[in-house]
Length: 251
Image 1 (tube, rainbow, N blue to C red):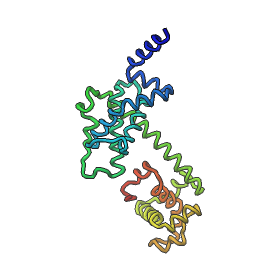
Image 2: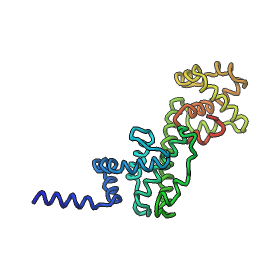
Image 3: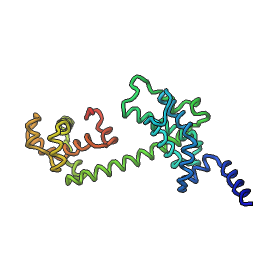
Image 4: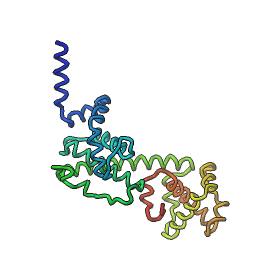
C-alpha cells in the first residue's frame, strides 16, 4: 500500500508543469532546484550554443553563465506576465551570454546576431507581452545591481572620508575642467606608486602627482575629492558607473 502511494505521488509530481515546479523552487525547494537545473542542462547548452555558434561543453565559461541565467529565471519567473518559463529563460540566457561576450571581448571575429533575442523561429510563439515580461525582469535586475553598486561605492568612499554629496559639490563645473580631472585620475591609476599611495594613505598623493601632470598644485587640490572618486571608479568593479563615464575614461 505504501509503495502504491509513493508511486502515485511520484506520478503526480511528474505531471507538474515547469511553471508549477518554479513556484515550488521559489518557495525554497533547493533539492528540486538542483534537479531541474540538471534536467535542463541540454536546453541550456543548446540555448548558449545558438549564441556562441559552436558546441558548448560544461567546462566552458559560457555554459556557467547559462546555468546562472537559468537559475535566475526560475527564481524570478512570474506566470502572471504571460510568458512561458522556457521562453522567459531562453531570452534571459541569451542576453546574459551576449553581455558576457561583449564585456570580455570574446568572439571578435563573430558578429552577434541581435535577432537571437527577438526571432520567433528561435522562440516560437513569443508574444509582445512575453518579451515585455523579460524586459521588465531585466530592468528590475539592472535596478538592483545599480543600487548594489552605488552602495558599494558609497562604502568605499567612506574609507576616504568622502560621500556622494562631497563629490557632487566638488565636481568641476566646466567640461574641460572635468576632463582634466579625469586625466589626472587616469595618471594616478596608471602609476603603481601613486595608486598604492592612494590605497594605503586614503588620500591623493598631491606632491608626487604634480610632478607628472601639467596642471598646478592648486588645481589638483581644488579637484582632489573628484579625482579620488574617479580613480576609484576606474580601478574598481563598477560596471554602471564606468558606463556613465564611457567615452571620457577611455578604458
